[in-house]
Image (cartoon, rainbow, N blue to C red):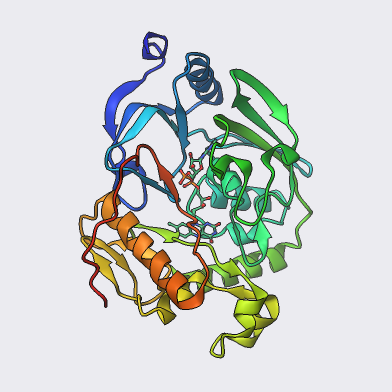
Length: 324
Ligand SMILES: Cc1cc2nc3c(=O)[nH]c(=O)nc-3n(C[C@H](O)[C@H](O)[C@H](O)COP(=O)(O)OP(=O)(O)OC[C@H]3O[C@@H](n4cnc5c(N)ncnc54)[C@H](O)[C@@H]3O)c2cc1C
């Protein structure tokens, strides 16, 4: 720990204010990095001293345990973007939407769907974030990481991307801080790109949850057999073999369900919100309840898109869900 003290590390910092769900316990150690080299130095130092590191962007896809997160939480506030012809190098702390806008200003497209995704480039990469059938790994050509105590560039294949998934999300994931990314973007048809982005934004305004949420809590289910058997599923989803998690939760009668301060919204049942002072345990318990009920009714197990951070050992789901 001494090694980290000179790098601006604080102790016992409450994390709720660094998450969009506005809940969760303290980080054992916490630091904000505004510069790339500072981010790298903190990650290297912690990794070399065997201190667990959790890198946090805008906290829009995480639920830290009420008990807190052991080790160092590294809050990534880096901001640099370099654009040279079609090659873009961006710090992992850059906002994903900001990256899209800056690139479009320089005549580059391909990231239109990023409008309205409230997170950093680093966070987007970890979950292979995307929308409207696109995802962030598409134009990625390399990434700079700190892993096993060294700083180096790796190929995109290192991340083992899948739908809304990468190796950094999986159980037993390696400790890794993404520092920067490199992309090769296509030239944009400016009018088409702006129109597309505006259209995406309009669609989002109609669907987006109120503040204090983490967006969609569960991943959509890719299951052609299930999709084919659901009479009320729109034909285009049947064709695609995709069942929205919100559809399953709604059909299981859980839209509007509440537990403590956590709620699955009526407007979109896959949006879990912190309606009123929810604890992380309220949120996770309501999520567990939804998983159970959907599995009982449809035989599929919903998978969380939101990542649970920190110490959830011995956690037991709370009872007392009130249906909406
Ligand atoms: C209203 C709303 C709408 C949303 N819409 C979408 C959507 O359309 N599509 C979509 O895919 N997602 C969506 N999300 C989810 C979320 O915004 C994205 O997953 C986003 O990319 C997460 O970025 P973040 O910086 O907030 O990551 P965080 O939540 O801070 O972190 C997420 C995970 O990534 C890890 N991580 C973050 N940065 C780094 C780094 N530099 N190095 C290593 N690990 C890192 C964290 O440890 C954590 O495990 C939405 C969320 C909200 C609240």
